[in-house]
Length: 113
Length: 114
Figure (spheres, chains in turn orange, red):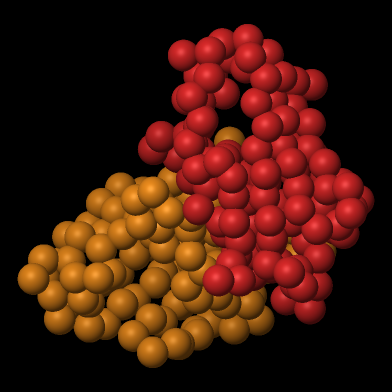
């Protein structure tokens, strides 16, 4: 049973445009949501997070939106840069139950110069 | 560099052999996690420690797997009698008690079982 779904395996955008990466989840116990970025041959790097009590969190070019009723979150990157090309993982966590991150399969983002 | 480090970065072994991986977390982090990532999948949780106590193990962690964190600092993950299905990237992460949900990952150890 896949609790975290990133249904689009890849996304290609032009440099300077907006990248929107989507994530859906099924477990209503998730109350904190993280995004990680991964380059080949490296471990995932923490990017941005959002608590379930918020619907938006912004950090520079990165904004995460959370729609709890729809169990959906999205990561917006604007403007997109070639260095953003990587695999992005959505990773929710249930802070009250345990501390394991539950990762989606990831989305490969390619930003074209 | 004060990030999470893992050793070795790559390991090739023959089926049936034992292997051991090491993880050194960020120094002040009291939580340490092990994850496994196979091709085309996201990382999957294996186990985690708070200080030296192993608090949770995934059902993915069969009896052939054992993890330790003897002094609450570095951790080792041992796989006995390796199988081809053990081939994966083994990732270690650590977090601080005050913001434990933000986990910081090491570069991983890529295991290939031939």
